Image (tube, rainbow, N blue to C red; front, side, top):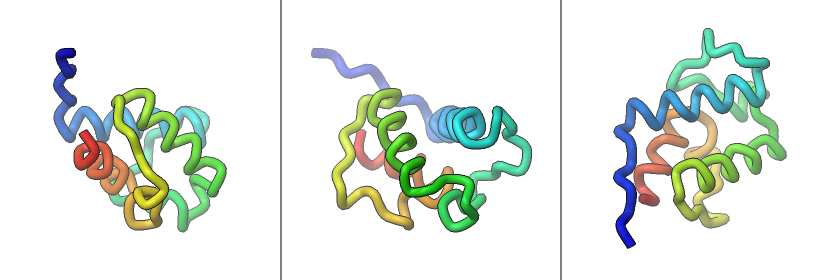
Length: 88
């Protein structure tokens, strides 16, 4: 089976930003920077983290474990992007 190449970090970050904006901010991407706190600011709650993880697994064909789901990995777009890159 041939694995589809993973998009570059810029593309991954943009796709995660779009998902978070659409799902949690009524499509508003303004003010949603790579280092904007998602969980600690209340943009994404604990149930929302599950939605984000399911999106990452489905959209980027990665498998995440319970150990991957941490504040360090899930609190910013950059953390989520790096998590995807590390699991591919």
